[in-house]
Image 1 (cartoon, helix red, strand yellow):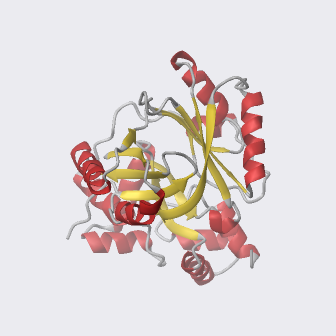
Image 2 (image 1 turned 135 degrees about the horizontal axis):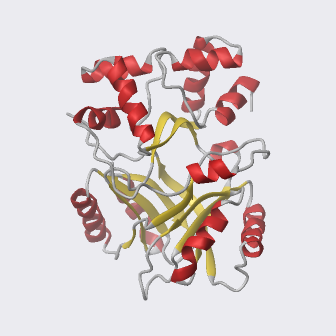
Image 3 (image 1 turned 60 degrees about the vertical axis):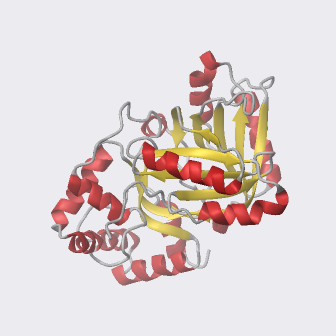
Amino acid sequence: MNTSLEYRLLNDYQHDFPLLTSPFAALAQELGVSESEVLQTLSRLQQQGMVSRVGAVFRPRSIGASTLAALAVPEEQLEEVAAMVSSYPEVNHNYQREHHYNLWFVVAAPDEVALQRVLKEIEERSSCRVLILPLVEDYHIDLGFDMTGNRRKSASFVAAHASSPCQPYSPTPDESRVIAAIQSGLPLVALPYAAVGESLGLAEPVVIGALQNLVLHGVIKRMGVVVRHHELGYRANAMVVWDIPDEEVSSLGHCLGKLEFVTLCYRRPRRLPAWRYNLFCMIHGHDRDEVLARVEEMRHGCGLQHVACEVLFSTRRFKQCGARYARVAA
């Protein structure tokens, strides 16, 4: 990291970004620097690819419709199919992983009809059967990256990052417009909420109030600096999938979700005979050996020594951006 300011912005402000008229000025005051320094540094980090955006991360299933999906693509067609999948604005993550199912992507859409349309088109255009694995229950979803190695998940932190809302939230018309305006990130200007409001014809207090309400209802998972893990040195990541007896998934999911190094833990459906696994975890590490060592910690920490699992390392990132749950007005 080039400067202590860069480090602080990347590490300390991934959560709880201020919903204030001048949020960057509030950060600057805490950091003992000028507002312009904060904005210039964040802009530079974004240009360098270390920051994806500054803004909201939405909780899956709280609004719109989304799913994890996978394709088993012949190796000689992988580049072409991956480019086609990434071309959809509804696709926000698209990775190659070490498995027969070698292309894994996330689709988010305003509703289930739009979601299924995209999945059907991808299946038809790729000539590969799409494995559709929607989230059933989440036990821990954070995706913040601790650069110190000292952060610990408190009981309150674990509770705050578990349990999706039972029912999807229905945003008001103004909230839907705000979601569409910020889903790619806040503008890096002194008065970002006023700028969003001006683009929508809404007063700044209406924009801030909408965001506060979306946080209150659990629609916005976190507000903050969204970093790119690979550029921060987390060069190995794996999706670890487990074949857990259905009656034990919830208890084991909560056990895994409490482990310091687990950033995501959730239940998804089996798709027999093609897919037997029902519990998914994400682990990020600085190298492959670190990730594999953590898989062993998971086994011993939660009594999974004799449970079937597979470790799907990511080998290429084709696309990574914020999910788009709302349609942007033309």
